[in-house]
Amino acid sequence: MHQNYHFLQHLSVRLRQELIGKEIVTCFSQNKDELVIGFANGSKEFYIRAGLMAHFSALSFPDDFKRARANSVNLFKQMIGQKVLDVVQHLNERSFYLKLTDDMLLLFKLFGNRSNIVLYQHGESLHLFHKKFAADAELNPLEMDRQLPQNFAAFTEAQGNLRKLYPTFGELPTDYLEQQNYSLATLDEKWELVQQVLEQLDNPEAFYIIRYKGKLRLSLLELGEVVYSYPDPLEALNNYSRLYLSETGFSQQYEQAKQQLTKKLNGSQTVLEQATQQLQEMRHNRSYSQTADILMANLTNIPPQAEEVTLYDFYTDQQRTFKLKRNESPQKHAEKLYRKAKNQHLEIQQLEEKAERKMEEIILLESALQALAEVENYKALKLYLRDHAHLLSSKQQAQQQSPFRVFETEGYKILVGKSSQNNDELTQRHTYKDDLWLHAKDVSGSHVVIKHQAGKTIPTTVLEKAAQLAAYYSKRKQDSLCPVIYTPKKWVRKAKGAPAGSVIVEREKVLLVKPENPFEKRK
Image (cartoon, rainbow, N blue to C red):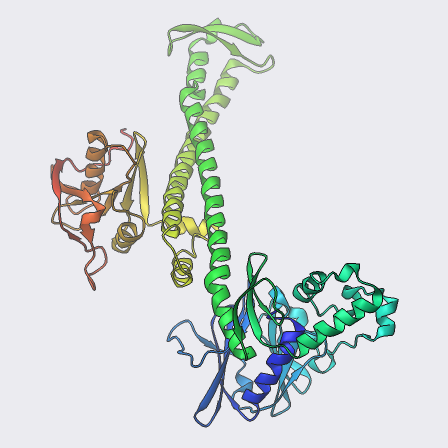
């Protein structure tokens, strides 16, 4: 009920007590769904923080507010310096407005996930906080009252239908009445029950935070499990917003992030499997160029206008049957095959690049899901969502953000950092304590990681290839031999204030290898 009309009635009264005579001294936003408005009267300050997110929209009233130095923008500049003359609650509506000096009105439209704040002057809208709700510019705060006939005659005509007469009730008062057998009562009894509930809504004993149907709710009625009760609507809404975001909001955003990442991971895995299968088919099937070679070598053995011919395949040392076109010469057919062979080569190259990109995405998404599993509270989740925003947006952005190259051998994934900054990101965010970490000894170069597999020991052949990559992507690339250190990630740490890519290795082993990329095709 935190955005229910009956609660907003009480909230408006309290806001009127707090705000009348105060001046608006600041108005800014630090993210796209939050607006902070500061009021002051001498040394006494008051803040309204409007969190208008799609999954949860609510007002709160912090005692003070420390504005961030970055990512903060001033909004609604025309109302700075204006004083609050009144706070007006709309009748039977989930909205109210602040009447300001200089003929300004500030509308708080609290319609669930379509909530918005709009500034008006001289009857014209100046600014919308959420511009995506463009139609809000046409609202007139002076004409938003809803007159509803709620006398006994209208109640009788509607046969006690609560939706028709009391659309402002919402779920909780309706359920509260049902618990008192409202649907089984006579019409007179129903009317009496409704009047009793209205009396409780108008004069609640307290403002309750309840747990009802598995969710935290703000209520004017004792329903479900009462978690907290408060005498003041400002205090109740403050604590409800905080509890909801730390509990219910945490759960919703956590699951949403998990679903998004899992969906992307499954999609990337599917694309990788398809690309890998296509590559295998192209590499193992007889190539177009080989077929063309056999046709050209056997031109004298192909009868004119033949549609099928059996020829000796010198690539496999076997007889093989070839399909031809009756009205096309073998030379023309071979020419087409040579063109197809060229395109096939390009297609294989494109598929290889596509598979590599998808492998990078899969590692990033797997690391992100692993990091998400370690998030335990709302504060940590906010930091996580900020740091992983690129993965929770478009696929193209996720690809652009990949900080490492990916190689695969014998079922193991090897990650190679692309730059100093990427080295930091690879080691600090995508590498875990049991992964094996490698680096060329005593010179700058890429961080290299072999992803750990539970219950398995990394084969020597995989270790050697990873070491070769560490040497190859280092300042010792041109050396004949290069020493490479390796150790579990748990023995690698970054000193505070150290430059990008710089780490401290507490325990290490050394492997001597030839610097090269063992995954490059030999020509």
